[in-house]
Length: 294
Image 1 (cartoon, rainbow, N blue to C red):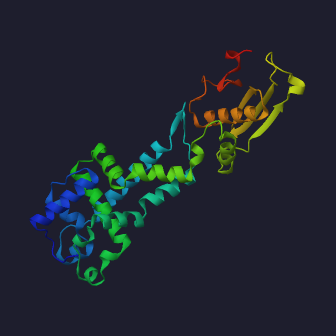
Image 2 (tube, helix red, strand yellow; image 1 turned 60 degrees about the horizontal axis):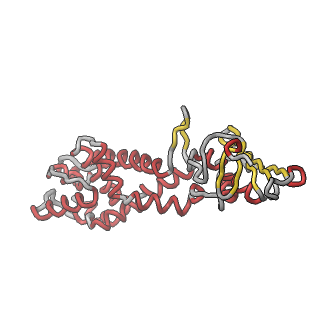
Image 3 (cartoon, helix red, strand yellow; image 1 turned 90 degrees about the vertical axis):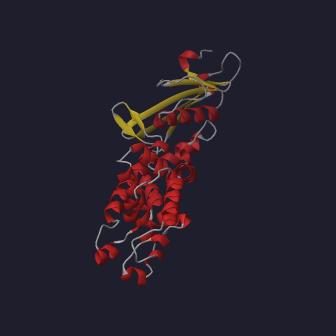
């Protein structure tokens, strides 16, 4: 910390280089750079501007782009006139809080080694406020606010700064894969995935109904006929998928898989696509029943 509002030429160059490397934006204005590092305790004693307004701006920019990037990773989709997302609101709130917490932002400032450049008044200097998480988090937001002002609110610049400074691609991908793995599914894990989705409140508990070879008979190749109908309520809308297969297990897995595809609005990677109610699973292919006749 320092009690004088000034950076040497070497210090300015170093700060600008670090910020550019970590955010992708070069702050040319020496005045904005100084303001981003100036605490209110200094301006209260010596006059001039401090970093509180830049901190406010940076906080809003950070919040907006963190949500935007999270939504992209959570595969936010537009279903006709409705907007849906693979993760629940509570999960997104927890994820956002983790990414923008004082602890996370302070850690970034520590990694960049910038707290020592804070410009403070006598009281802050005596209390060694540069060790406080909140103070370092405020500095991060002030730097982001300075980038917003200097770039004239260039959206591409700001999104890149947030994405790069927080290593968001890496962090969000890691957190989502760790905590929200039910978003990744295939035929083999479909039944458990659908069960987990229901436990997270994404849909009702799935109901399965079966038709057996005793009533359905056998196909011309001598394989038993099984049919499974899977039903869930998804955001007050019912999803029903029926699948014919040569075993009870295969029919159940395929029916659960198709329900998940409809819920998340993703493509069936085992065959054709479309909102058909009756399907057939055979030889690794999952096709609408009318396209795969015996």
